[in-house]
Length: 289
Image (cartoon, rainbow, N blue to C red; front, side, top):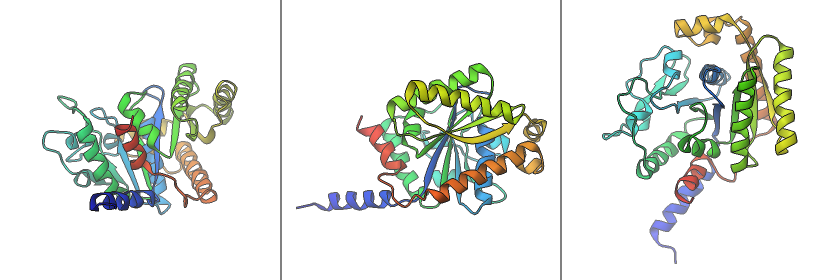
């Protein structure tokens, strides 16, 4: 006969399985490719299309999302893992327009120590937050480490930023290869940033795609191209999201088109049947491996 604790666990699991939120990890093989800038503006545009969105800066101690958006948040995710933890809901900052942000923190004297107990508390609190959103976007730190890999393997989809430069292409291939070795079914979308023209962007994607197909038998989706645009540099200096700095700039128009394409794909492939959700997968990686 099932005891009360087991019944409660089953009810909580059923609640987790029913969550409709989609989780995305935005990653890059190396730093300096514009990953955080893309993640922020992509999240803003998803919000502008009627979605509730949370962007979570997972570059703990070296986060950029708050800086790029001109925010000075009272708390960051580092405060959750401190000696006196701050609840996740208290550290949410809202941008004009309604996008919610949890900052990664900058200028920390020491990085927080993350153990299994604190991570378990994180998953419990995060489960409650998920009910509030259609999309949660994790802006991951560049490259891979054990903690970031656990998050990446738990999301529904991974967006990989690269540039046309050969080292960036090689690094993008390497992170996709590593993640695919852990989860062959993980869907990937590619964004080519700082492309001088459309031809260069398409050629860059085709190069990555063909190598992945040849060596890993892995297909990836093409999300789009962001042009090399001085408006982005100017927006960063002003600490304004580039889509808000100049909505008519080539980079903004490209981002709008990219978001529209993503939303159309979402409409054609609805998420009404989900075997397991982000928190359930994260718990499995943390506590069953």
